[in-house]
Image (cartoon, rainbow, N blue to C red; front, top):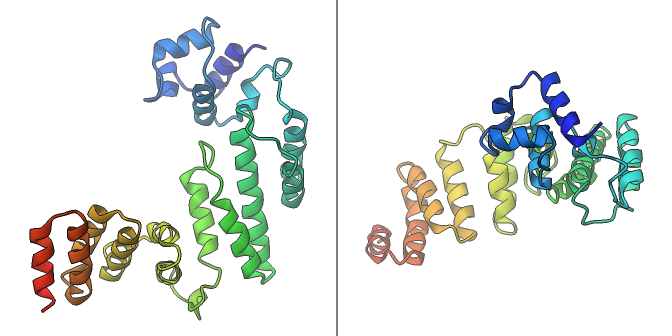
Length: 265
């Protein structure tokens, strides 16, 4: 079966029209040409269509025509993952040869899922620091298959690992635990701090906005930082004023910077 035939069959099995499958990424005319075999999709287009149809990109490729040094290895890795052997998946992927436009997205997904499974197992075995290491490594992987729900699963698991000062965080609400975890990384890793904060449900709390504003300021995103700090300002005027002065000074908005400098006197 050719790529075009596989694509059309998968679309019909999913109950999608050509227009529904296209979304906003490709035109219906282009999809029609791919399905009738008069055009071949780029790797990026095929990745997009595979994601929309819930299929691995390798499903659509003519296996006889694929020239990838990772093909046999990926077949074994899929079997290991299907057998609930995440450690075996990671062992196999140690020999993965990158870059590989055919299998890179799927390899990243398998790495992410295997480490996520091992981190969950480590937490159940009361090995939180090993779990934290695995979850940190998950941040190295991104792409079409690493969806927001998967990232959210990682964040929830990460919130269960101990921060240096977290204490009884396990007994706290998820938002409180995430905020405490984020604060622990504000100085050393503001990007990680902001990522943890984005997983919180309550983004209106003054302390949340103060922390997010401070993290954005440390990342050099002064306009974004000022927006967050203004949301915290009514409840925390003394803490936000010096930070807003810095944000506006860095943006060369000296009149506003002077205003907040005066508020501190």
